[in-house]
Image 1 (cartoon, one colour):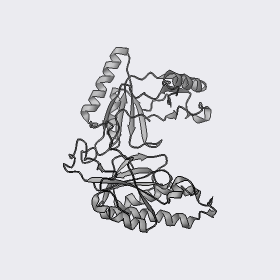
Image 2 (cartoon, rainbow, N blue to C red):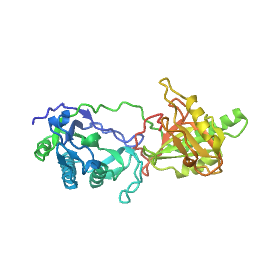
Image 3 (tube, rainbow, N blue to C red):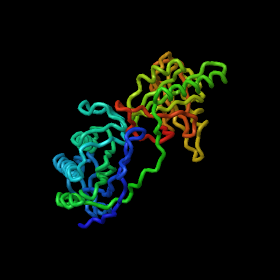
Image 4 (cartoon, rainbow, N blue to C red):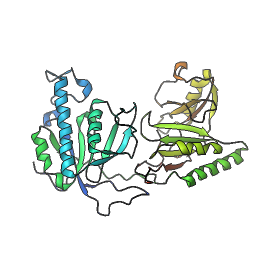
Length: 359
């Protein structure tokens, strides 16, 4: 198969923000999609399996066995290894990490902007296919890859690796041109969460306290990954910010909100309070807001329950211990906030967080 030099062409990701500058001559990467489906299966004329959970089910008159699944998974990993070697990619930065379950012990901390070596990236990719490791995209100047839905693997490689695609096709995978991976034009947070940032948060709190004639508190969201295990939150006054600043994770996005209206409700009134909070921020399409519930205790780090906009109203069993709760809608994208990213140990920011991120 001949591959067009301009097929899916894009520029590889730039360098660190507020740290090492971007490569002045970035490598041009070409986008492709690898899959196990021939044209008939891609069109849907022939039924085929799409997920690890399909083992044991019948497709086109055949039972998917664990052994066949494993052979297919091995083929994908071998293909990526071939491309990485041809591209000269030895390390990858994790992007769009999604945590809904704890990462395996061998992997350690997983967060936006972490760098892993090729062996760890391949192991993560294999685990993602079977649901054993967090989902993530992998980026480097030499190569990028991400596993899409239904066993479609998106890759971006330099010209020097194009010849390896023939070897991958000989393995039994199909190579398709992929023109859907456009350059990321979203605005990203580049400010460092340094002492100046925390001083500004404290200053806004002081102004709010003065205006309200009572001590104000800020809702601080620390996010290191997407998903329910990718963030934690605090509700603190100005004198508590230093302890928060000392405990946030590297490369985490810090969002501080100082103008939230938090309503209190007894345990038996929480469901009604959630319903009212949802209605207060319904959007133009009629979708309700996500709502945050937390027990009113002296703890600065909140044990929250987040009721998403389409979830049923919470009942008593959904709530953490306590009799009095704070309830408020998750801040809208235009809510007043201060945002910054915690730099890594080297003082650089490698995470890429979209400005005004919400859940």
